[in-house]
Amino acid sequence: MRLILIRHGQTPSNVAGFLDTAIPGADLSELGREQALAVPEALSAERIEAVYASTAARAQQTAAPLAAALGLDVVVREDLKEIAAGDNEMRNDMPAVEVYMHAMVQWARGDLDHRMPGGENGHEVFDRFDRVVDEIASLGLETVAAVSHGAMIRSWVGLRAANVNAEFVAAHPITNTGALVLTGSPADGWIVETWTGQAVGGDAVTDTDFDGVAAEVTRGF
Image 1 (cartoon, rainbow, N blue to C red):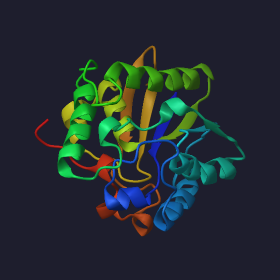
Image 2: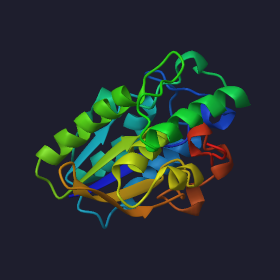
Image 3: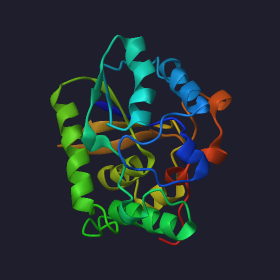
């Protein structure tokens, strides 16, 4: 099957660089709404049969135009939510950001025992995301899109996809409404067909200077 993982559109917290991971979180900014509206046309070549989103407001708001264009309802699952920042929630200073991104890369390396201070460990994060992927795969559909979050997508793909690794994940951000296309299954594994650092709506709705912490290149991890 084809699994399209889409990062939500821009939010005010992204612009300010806050680790805004709690539910429901910030709404989309004006640019974020433009990005969300551009997603259906950008993905029009894909035969998407279901649209999933996390419980975060920004994820559901990003998924809504795509689902509406396809005549589908958005399937909301809490387990698609962002990696929780724990003790560093709503901080935007460099030490907090480094702790957060370090956890993302460690999990992509397979160190699932590592725990975010005051938050989840890798086993908990991957178990919940895997549950939704397993559910999606069980539908027997050709192509499914899921709107999730930058750090969550990068970490999960870094470990679960055979053709990328933690170093690739650290060096390749996912901008707001950036989309990754994977093929495979939970049983057979996943291959990343495309990894985009650009908004699927194109340059007209892209402002990568304000994509937030989860879209940063990480070094030294």
